[in-house]
Length: 220
Image (cartoon, rainbow, N blue to C red; front, side, top):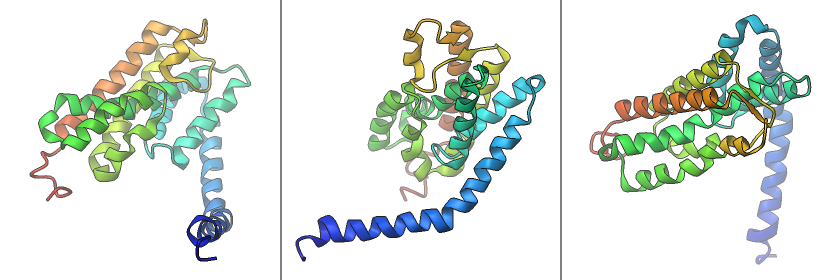
């Protein structure tokens, strides 16, 4: 039993407790929030396409894979079944912004980042290109008050421009690699413009807001 504790008993008990807490304590409120967000988004008409894109983009970059992010993503995927491809394009454009933006920020302001953060910035390009916004979490965890507003600003711009340009996307995932699928993306050129604009805003904004390591309380 002593040998099994660290590899079986403790993980099993921890999983059971965590699962029960998620189902009976956390699950209900989070589920209600997600349903409310989905109904709110569904109530927005095509006349509000630009506003919808801005909102979806900001939601996608707010909690980097959390409930708000997932509510926006679920909404976009659900619309694919009804052949409404614009929101999914806005969501994926915004979803690539956080990780890629953090990589750009470390490149623009190298002196303001520690060596491990510079390495993390280089690594963030890979998940960013794959539509994995969680690549920005290491930065958001250390500096949320500056990272989250930066990612939301860039995501909102990318999502808004994508809807404004009438871009469409028929795939629910894949990042920039979906461009290799014929006819998967509508208005490819303008779609790339929307993504690049969002990335530059996030990267430039965080590069300006970021404090040098010697002044950052995290490193003090």
